[in-house]
Length: 74
Image (cartoon, rainbow, N blue to C red; front, side, top):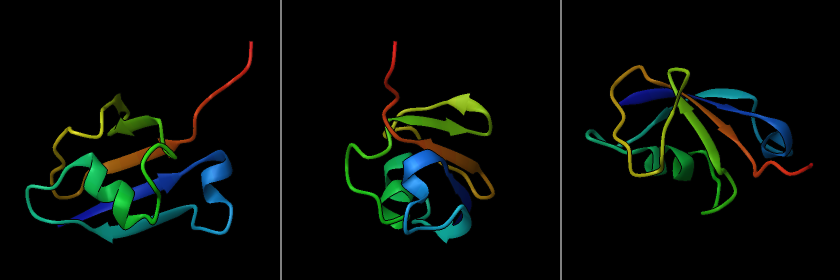
């Protein structure tokens, strides 16, 4: 199935800003993260269709996934 993946901040370095990626049917957020070429832990803030999700959450055809690196500051 196809999902739109949007990368933000440092995740864009040497990668894309937005892409439609193929993930397995009955795929998970973690599958889309891998399809984007990110390693485990690189994306720590995730939103599916503007709602917070976790790597183990399921995806459906046409979802939009926004990925952010760890956020720091004070």
